[in-house]
Length: 158
Image (tube, rainbow, N blue to C red; front, side, top):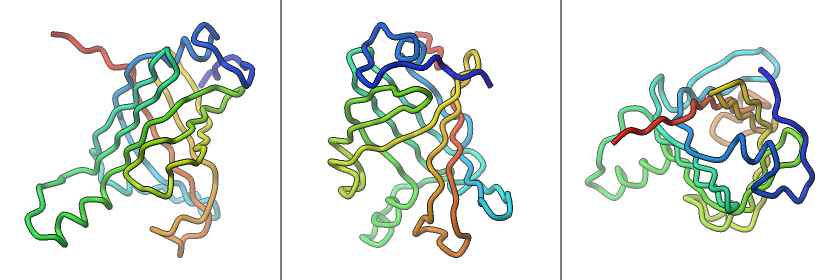
């Protein structure tokens, strides 16, 4: 995949990488890769749904939901729904091939006030996003993992 051009830390809406990312992207896949073994698995099922939207004014919205979600009725069922959603928003900027979000609202309060860094690659109408390698609490027994999230440019019609 071709990478977006490098840009400065103070990315403006007219920078090539920002212009290339601006708009809506529909989720195609969400996989996790295990560093030690190369194993890949879909933590939210084979058909998760989601979008990422990059506003040229500098705000990003990201939402990803797991396959087969159903409304919860009990408190426990409702709480379990949090295991199959990722959602946040904040100001975004580009540094080289990294998209950085200064999170100000999130499904997980621990993310608020943090900067989330994601390496990205653009290939035409496809956007691949990679999280840094780290030990995730959800599957700590696997060691270091990273998420590989693939989107395609959304072409909405009325």
